[in-house]
Image (cartoon, rainbow, N blue to C red):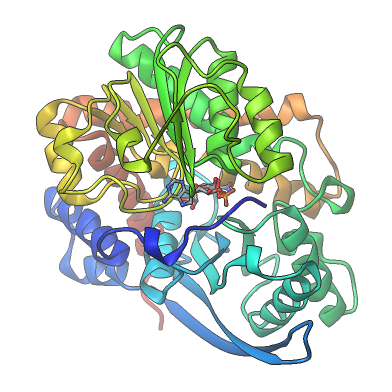
Length: 425
Ligand code: NAD
């Protein structure tokens, strides 16, 4: 696990308003039936839990957590669990809706969900974190299940947290249920390749985006905001593919070196062991805000939502933005970036690698038949590059932004599923 944002770094605006605005824009363009639009504008289930946890000093603390199901027309719902002080019901709603679109863009048989707990996991001991996680798992136990709702890691959670949830659910049901959650350790049914999957997916879509734009990835300058699971892996793989990573950041700040930051794998390892980007690394220390405005070829926001907004979009100098994070660009920023000709590869496509390999993990668990990492990576590449091509084809025909094209594909698939099933009763 890496770090979470502090309240002082809370994202601008309200992600739920942004998510609905993105849907509304495309619904208008597609001439979507008003009733269907209302269905899609709402989350199907919104579950809030307030639960006590015994702390190490003997005191009792009450935590608040959420699990939200946006839409399950296409299958069991899927989506991560976030531990952060910024978690709110509106944030979880937005993330759940984005999961619906992401699964549909990738053609996965899942609906969208998300969950989270308002907590800074770094402020808890390992024992407190485990007790909090197990109690939260028990509280949402009536929603989750291999056929119903399959959570996964997100900001502030990791494979260990997933293992505690898998074990708690299994204890409650009297048998081992690995398919209840993805992103687990490989020793208990996790998939090879899952830890790196989102960052690897970012690499694959960046390769496709460069091809579409006639831009060489080799030698392209890259800035990455957020040096956690997604950002650090993306930075490492992009560097291995020949790109020049010139800036990276975490919640504490950013470092920049115009000639490149050197061996990114070393930086990843140092960050892993020391917890933060080390002071000693060569490069200039800059702020996170400055990182977003660097003159780079490719910007990869991989931290929080709402980072590129109406207040800074005009100053963004990247030629291409590949959204590793969920919702890093607000609708207002999207309009400004489109006017500037910045090519934005949207989150629901760019960071779909995580849920694609989570899907593989779920399939492997259900079959108790596990794949080699090469096969996982190959299938990931095939699915995400195919999704990119489908989105690019719609974009070529309909114009607008790549985000609108991705939404058109996703919304069409969810609407088709909803219409095929009909409205109960
Ligand atoms: P993580 O907790 O592993 O890492 C988050 C990183 O962001 C940390 O390095 C943290 O220090 C940094 N950060 C926090 N606030 C910041 C700020 N204000 N400025 C710069 N950096 C900041 O989380 P993650 O799993 O890598 O998730 C990052 C983003 O990617 C989130 O938006 C998440 O929803 C999205 N995402 C994650 C996955 C996945 O598989 N983990 C899949 C799809 C999308």
